[in-house]
Image 1 (tube, one colour):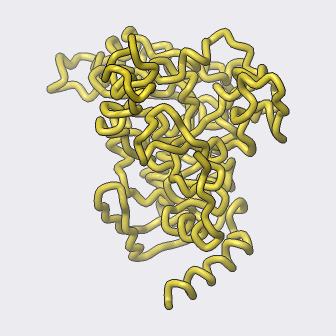
Image 2 (tube, one colour):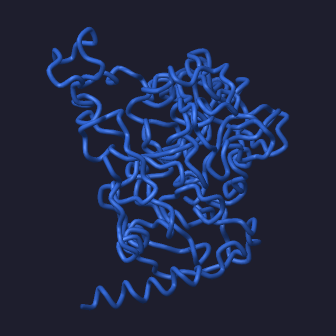
Length: 386
């Protein structure tokens, strides 16, 4: 099936109305989970006449991935989904693979599902026949090339520019850095020993969840706890994770209190130079995480949210974080820098931001919109007036 190519005007409208930037397609399910209507009823039967839901007669059949524990998260936002256990294509990406090899390099590329109009969208077979999860993109998630299409399992392949994928330049061929700053659980899930036995009790003398602010197993029942922090991803924007309540859909993502929610991170060794102490599993060995290890994402969290007062020093110049930092799709762009005072109203996954007294601190990375986008905005405004 060929990919439909939108006009320039369509691209601009998509970018402006969805919070994307020109050239980066939005992740369709950012801040949400896949619905059972997708993974229970797709992919469609292959071959067409095979017995329904029978792996004996069908190579594909409706609901074949519905019992994968990570299926609700799969492709919803940018992450290295295919190297994550309990996802549809994990068997093609075994942990000991040579990630520089043409058959496996794509396993390390973050991606997400995108709209069919996305110019760099690739047709997906995982939920074949379903319309919303039909295309995905690597270029929405920090890559500049697709290192999979016409490359994997192709004896006559030619590497596209910027392939094999190795964003750190350290020949790790992974989205994260190497050594102590590597993602501790890349290609694995968190074990029950972590989420059942931690965090430690707070206060120390408390008895149970009624009088404890923290207690062992506090997050054990959460839907995405096994995947939390295992690979680079904006985990705190994903439902079913420990800090999702601090990052509700529709938040003003360019505000000091919520910008960190759209940043990718993963758990790292305690000796990682960019490591930040974590409280989620306090007392355990899973004690540090890093934004920087994920394609050099700046830390727009430490000392920033819930801490703004007039005269407070401007945070790192790379903040607030958005797609302009490393081409990683974010729910909102921040071309004017920080929004420090805002009233946010939400409706489903769509937000309306009514700034009452907005103050903009212009960071160096986004002081001006690219001229092309600025001109395109004029075109869009003109088009919308007629």
